[in-house]
Length: 194
Image (spheres, rainbow, N blue to C red):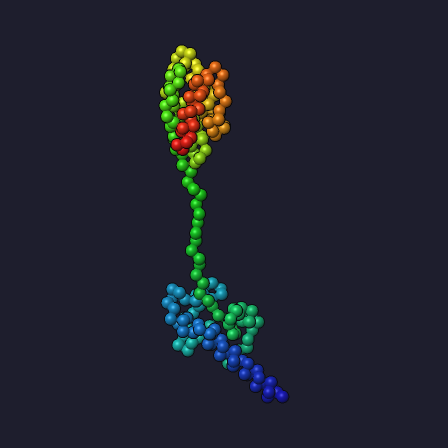
């Protein structure tokens, strides 16, 4: 009975040693042909030692009295027949997505002639958002100038109605209907160009 038990144990140890020395099927020749830069990586993160002409690596060669350990069986990879195998891993290329660069641009509407003169509107956009608006070439002095100043004060600037509403749908300035209408026409044309 003891002889049978020793024979079975010896056969199991010998089979395990052969499997560990040989490695997983199909990895023997490929691992030997791999350049040093692509050397297999051991589970601890360092490169595995170079294979020896006998087919195994110096650190994985068991001695005649070696017994399989719980550690060796716990680190087996699927598809291996026994022992541990180290597989080379390559990191996937990193892909980064950058947020689109926000551009600031200025768009000027056409000159619109109206009863008291002419004007055009210039808007500044950050991305697709209006951040500033101003009336250009507006009448200066007299009643026309006062009307233009009222329209400019209500609509233009970074805190004006154009920036607040983000459109040409503006309230008409009382007492400056013609100037307001001309401003809105030029503004709408600038928005259409943007």
